[in-house]
Length: 499
Image 1: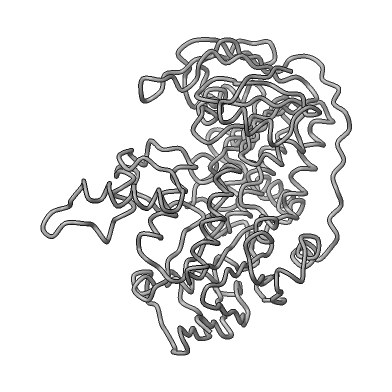
Image 2: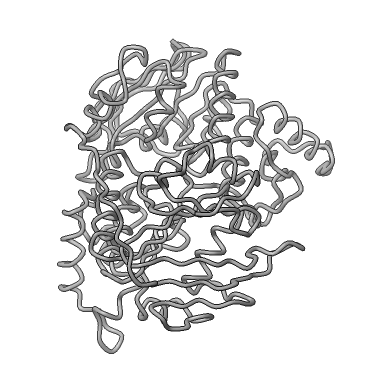
């Protein structure tokens, strides 16, 4: 056995994240670890990577006990990890981020050699990047590719992938899964943490299920299916969601010729015309970096468009700030929960009312009891594993923080909601809950703009779908005429269709 983790336990005070977990990995194997948010998956892998120290238990590599004081020790032992949340230097180029720690050049950094190395990696694994681009200017999908290439450059024999496809397009996901299979055939070993069970079934050899910090079993992928894994993860049957036909009414959001300059010669947004009406969900699909982020931020008051108009409930709100737009009837589930949706240093209760704190305060002072009562209700409703409401947000798992932000924004009952990547990083049970809540909001007359990199989510929830390509709307389809193939073609710039 290449790797053995025996009786791993990790506790944070009275909270036990891992309880006596046994896990092993064979050479050339893809072993998936699945479970609900807060089940202990990432904690277990952070222990393996030297980012956390187990309270008790042992790790063996090739039959010999190993101890990793930090990630440097793990890397030195042939273990690499691609994290769910990016660990990149935004002011460095793509090439500099990938080769860091193994920079070419005997005396000084050889930039040309670094670029050539990255170009070779990119070609070998089919993961496209521009080595010369500044990471801070790259969209989320490209940053994820940089993380993956960085670990591959380190030459790890065991590669931990923590939700690696969360920001990738279907085409990019397929390329990554093929690269994993190819590398596994060459003897590399993978530990795959993901909520996407279809991906697990397509690439994994074995699957370990965690629940409440314990390993409930390990199955051969050939002996199970998505339905059984779902039951094992959440402990119940998942009911299929039902979506009644839309009954859209008056326009709530109306964009006219909205344009915004980009960092380069091409505009970030070019003459966007879009409406969202009462009682409908309009989905926005597109490969990351084609203007979706700028569209969201322009509507939410985080960017000021150069031309065009934004109307909300018949009122011109073009150029208004985020607070004014929230007061006018907008709620916003942001695409990046840490940059736009929370503060790691804040408490769970404080994060639960961020952006809406003026409704619970007077003269700059928050009403603490009312705040905690409100957030406590959301925690129960969305099954958020938060411990005390006084815990720091940074101690929540990514999925539980996502559920808290979704609960916060839905609870405002605003006429208009931007839902950007609403289920990113959440487990299948939480995804079911969030989808049902969005459909409930639609049925109550809410207008929702859904931006998602998951085409299955776009197709499941949307009534109309627009596709963005190079800052423009490449086409619009009714959901009854849309398919993943049609949307993928539009996402690649292959034609224009109108509803």
